[in-house]
Length: 308
Image 1 (cartoon, helix red, strand yellow):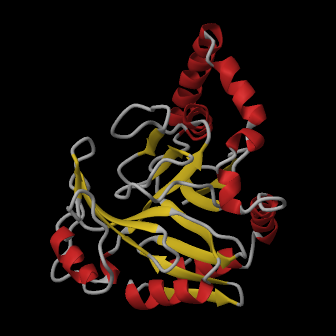
Image 2: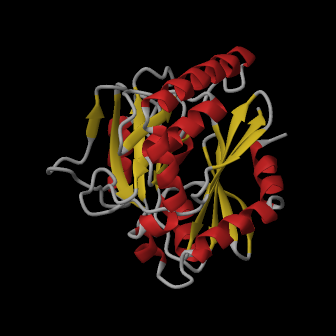
Image 3: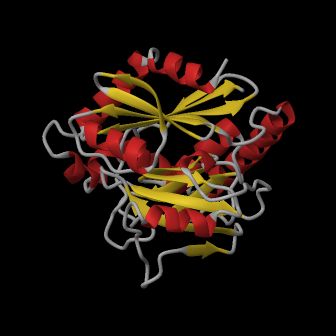
């Protein structure tokens, strides 16, 4: 089955799961605006905070670590997650027409499916879908490009959109993962990133174009308790920290092919100091050896594993 056919079939299904995510996010605005609620995490995550407090006691931590390590070993032995390949990523937007124009015209991605309230583009091997919602959303996502195209890609994109800067620099080298990135915004002011992983043995010839994008490789997941949610993801999907240890406000889980970027709500997204991470509904499907799914309660994030 072709990637285009998979995207088209996927868009016709999962309406129930999508509606659950939309209902979850809509509930944030029942008495307050969505962004205001993001700044009142105590009201939304009280139960999780109690659990987090209990988990911090030494005895429970020791037990949890033993259970987690055993679970990771079992899942790795079964080969449940060979690599973090993003098959499909569903995001939401309040400016559907503008986003469609940006991804199709500015980034030059192929439109593979469209309905009255959604569109899907092909980003390398990843189906990227946006669905309309009447609430503000904010995301961070990254696209991996061939390791020998960084300069060409940067020049290509600078002709289309302004690049974001950090300390007067418009690129960042990450020594811990041997990667280099530059950043820009889409039509919904989401923070996008083009990244090369120098240890990923994929190169191309000639000038850079949209067809050279390899896949979507990062999605940001703002949470209230990074350590607790990282533990859930590690236990469920056998994910491991990539490039550094888990901290109280940041975790980078996955491998060279794909990463879940867990950040504490309110932490600025790179390369800015003012764009603060806030929850917005996400549905991600990744490759694996057997079906598995997780709703990262109490957040509007659904992750599924499907056989590749």
